[in-house]
Length: 473
Ligand code: NAD
Image (cartoon, rainbow, N blue to C red; front, side):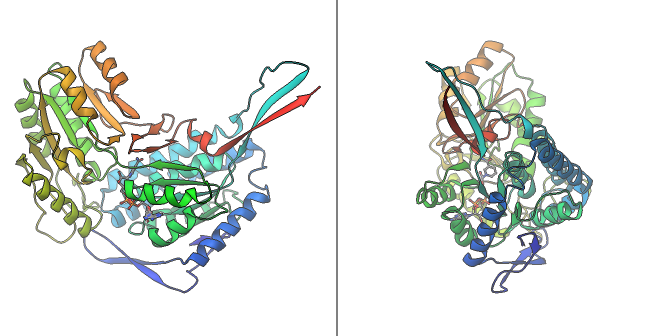
């Protein structure tokens, strides 16, 4: 763990074994922090914040440091991608593109450090009234296992840009890429003052909970599941600590007969089989017009032939191992439960009989909106297919889940595309493409998909506090 600028073990020396899910091999032993370690980390973060070495630095200089962090991330991207693929199971190619995306996020925020501006406000009388935007303070970043490094960088970059200090806690199964990245930042000597960036590892239920409930943590960013969102928000409420929660999803691709079906089939596969479907923004539902249902399902199944499954480091593999055998088994159990409620397996549906947490790309047709396969996040490579006949029915189906992250609309009718963009109850809509996001665009969920905004200039609002100043002249 990186605490106060020094690499250290946990207070009591305890460790957790870290696995390669594609082989089941133990590849590392990682400190299992105690609550005292959390306290030490928060104290160091608070001291680093109060010293103003970072928060009071010329913001252009902070930007230069973020730029160096971006460069060091790009320079180490390949070796970090090997670590990511080996620890998470995803393909090397996926890991590499995610890590480069993380570097790009740092580049984007490096340019914003000196553009975090307040405003002057016209008020009556002989007065000057203005706002200051000041850094939030100590921020805790609780990271999931599905994009272990990219999602860490997604929130660390704006927090640092705003002048906050950062405590990052990776998921228990996948801590290695964040540790290696922090090492790379130290080795590149980017100029971060000690204590500004810390990494603490261990159990979410213990140290994630302790961070969320700590009186000296000023903001918490969690990317994780809905139950963890409830737990973190409840804990944070004890100190009225603000939270950004990026939670689950149940994205739909809504396909009309006028769509480019061949391109759409490729995007549907990308949206549900990339990262073995372990994605908040997975397009896990296909809501397709009855006139093109059979043709599109056939095209999707044909496209699955181009998704060989195997160890993420092997050439030619497009779908790697899932993160853990226990998670793969959870997905298979949910699939079996869902099938009791209806639906026909058109393709896949099973574990792959070899070492590692592998599962077949799966398509289930005739799924009703009451089925758990339509309603719940399976977090695996399972596509549920539902037919519609009228536009209004498609919209109602798409909105009929507790989630509201990303939905895709496939049509060449411009008016229909924008009607859907307006009426879908979700934070992001993609038209004729799926899934897509950029560091400069908001990543945000409605309903149970979350609270707050990641990426874009909007993310900086969370990491800054507004102060209003009135001056009688
Ligand atoms: P998770 O909720 O199990 O864990 C997320 C993080 O929270 C981990 O670091 C974990 O150790 C920690 N944690 C667990 N219990 C905690 C507690 N009581 N208090 C504080 N921290 C705790 O999620 P996961 O299984 O790692 O990831 C999958 C989930 O993340 C899915 O639901 C997925 O949709 C969601 N996700 C959302 C986004 C998004 O941007 N909306 C992106 C990726 C993943």
